[in-house]
Length: 470
Image 1 (cartoon, rainbow, N blue to C red):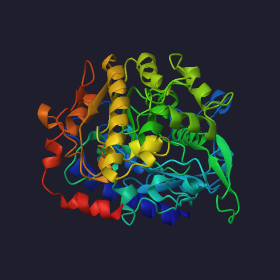
Image 2 (tube, one colour):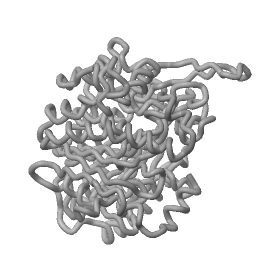
Image 3 (cartoon, one colour):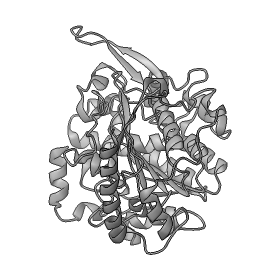
């Protein structure tokens, strides 16, 4: 980019920054916030990296690798309050499932070092149909890769997905709206956790085999590497996301938190549970064991020096034969962090992924009502066990509402925080989010038992319209 264009962008960003600071700045400064004069200075001379990747971090399993010298990632440090596309070269280890270039998005502010890292939601894949895009939302998100203009208003499923990363949301407020935002898109179908190149055959025998890169873990590591080399260390950091992004944030939280080294750190996993399912367990007692057994192999999770072994190297409490042990392992390893899990009791999306293709009585149910009842039964079985696990942890809370009539009652924090409420306790999702990020003492633990109230809410035209788009 030539100098006139760069300075034009900086002047535009400075003006936009001053306007946004006037309307959106928090009433009182927090840890990580800059003072007035430092903020003004940052508009002219943006702060650089103060916690860059070390030579040791460039080595070993899943190292933090950088774009090669001379590679133009297009990032303009002073282009505040706008989404910037950051491509990652193959030398970083990053690549989308179809082999195309991986890229992520940064929206920077001048007034704080605080940062939210948002992992995008989406499906999952483990065969030709689901990885090629034939199964739609039930398969891999972005099977054709990530376009540069992904976070425009023309793609509201990404740009307006959650109040956590919508800077001027009309009614849901959360302090991350004043922070630096990092949007990590999803294009590998492996909940940001895989490390295996798979070859899937067309079951019809007509198309060429699909070579698919389950490369989620290396993509996440490359994002963290770039953030360390280009942005300041956060005073506060939130890692979050819904669905695949929720569990992706969960599995990547420890290494990301370790390397970014924020002063205070938070995790909110929305609707991406890692249910307890010990290897070899009875599926009638641990319904998620069949799905987990498949993805362990297909995504390369169990390979020697692979994703799970890498995760355990920093989390000695992790039991590699039971993914549900990740919650207490994180709570034990990071006692000062505040973490939370949320999902609906009547989630029909993640539960369909988890059970429908693995239990004949569900897949062959005589009607939709019977199928949903069987899905709810197994989901409740897994959820109750997770709730009991979290109940013993002071720094890892839970918020489990019953139902919301949008997106198959999946993801409590998308679109808005409203209607993800627990009416019998007088709680809204805002209360849980604020407790995780602003509270002290034990993190909130709340669960809804009323199976009627949420279904009796009036018709919501916004939710209906969004469901038609989905």
